[in-house]
Length: 156
View 1: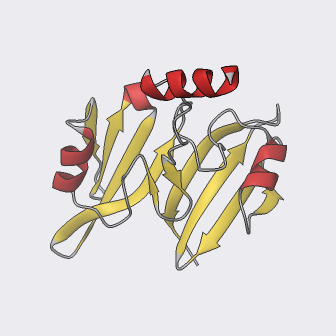
View 2 (view 1 turned 180 degrees about the vertical axis):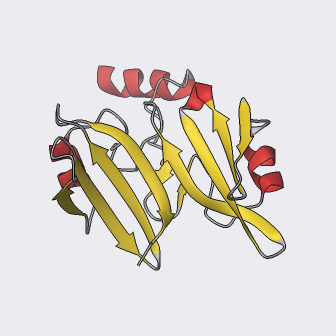
């Protein structure tokens, strides 16, 4: 009886645990940003960037410092669409709770179809999930934790 009262009180006062939201959807989006989105769509979703840089190769990068997010656009014909999303700050997570700061073991357990290899510098590992011409790479530091997540089109 007492348990039912506590559960009812938690539901009434909003104390029940909220379902986990997936801010990172492997090979689909990070923070709601998807590959192929336009600059306007990204600004509508995230607001104005803290910094915007365009280099001579016609790439433009929007930086959102508070989110630890960099979004890169590349001109392709008459459009300038998202080609890479780079996350370096804790906060965004997959449905299995993997994100920046997660352990190597958590990546192996929580990301299906990932393949991990040693990076050329031998201090890092790259764990990459591939699907439909897209890839999400979890960069694992020498401490065994995710330091960066990169979502992009496959380069092969």
